[in-house]
Image (cartoon, rainbow, N blue to C red; front, top):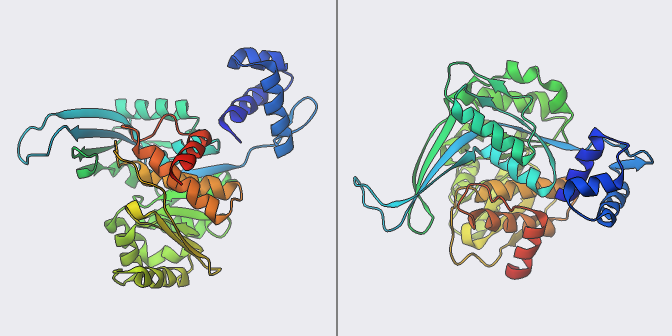
Amino acid sequence: MTQREKEIFEIIKKNPMIEQSQIAAMLHIARSSVAVHISNLQKKGYILGKGYLLKEQEYVVGIGAANVDIHGRSKKAINLRDSNPGRMNLSAGGVTRNVCDNLSRLGASVKLITALGDDVFAEQIRGECAAAGIDLNHSMKVENHPSSTYISILDENGEMFVAMSDMAVLQKMNVEFLETKTGVITGAKIITCDSGLPAETLEGILELFGGQQPVFVDPVSCAYAEKIKPFVGKFHTIKPNRLEAEILSGISINNKEDLKRACDIILEKGVQRIFVSLGREGCFYMDRNGMQMQRKLKPLEKMMNATGGGDAFMAAVIYATLNDFGIEQTLDYALAAGIAAISHEKTINPYMSIDVLEKILKERK
């Protein structure tokens, strides 16, 4: 479902008897364009007949962090223990929230289960999630507690120099709370979760829901890779970088053969698919059916912000899975999403869309 189709679908959901001319006026587009989008929705099975009978859209559930991200980018080479002139930027973030945000902008229906404090940052997170089309109705509010925050300092090239996070509120999300959300979680087509969750909560998600829906995870860091290593085989799809793959497999990766062997070890644990991020070398993919492939796109000449690239990549992988893409198209879309993300100064590129990904592929494939 494209972003425009999603907008029309939501309007029709609220008023199934609405006229096409009314929809056109609401969206400031031609009635003929509305007719084309409605025809596409009928072909895709979202609209079932006259009177706009609707089929409930498949959705993804994200379980994990929602932060406020504070980024500072230095104008020149960073001097330690000194004040460095730069540019500051503040926006909603958090690995799972970022994945959900990108997914929604690509046209997927998304529900986010997170833990928020009762401060002004929580209000900003709610506002940005609502603007992106993310359903936050199933999240928990923790009274008298600050929301998650993440601070990063980027060098003059946009590469991360140092970062710090305070995600204590996420530790409040336990298995007992998630059991109260069983209905919405089991109704999801795919679950994506955050390795920043407590280990017992992550394992609980896999035990309770992993047998019913595929669970996707990005280890995010070496420390978190160590956390998920004991039960990594219960995930359906994982997206480590090279260092995280070393931890999950238990071997050093010094060349292509080492990389393949590491992926084999991880797949033997029970993982169905693995996407290994290789920076400017793209991504290496393997699965339990014996498929392996490495793809890359022409890298950006200038990166604005490296923070959100991995989250956008994972979002595109999930989007492609929802739409039954082949692995080549999945990798292309995921790599394009990563480029779209790092080409904007904010964690989330506000222009993220399928059209943007297609444009990047035409320029860089």
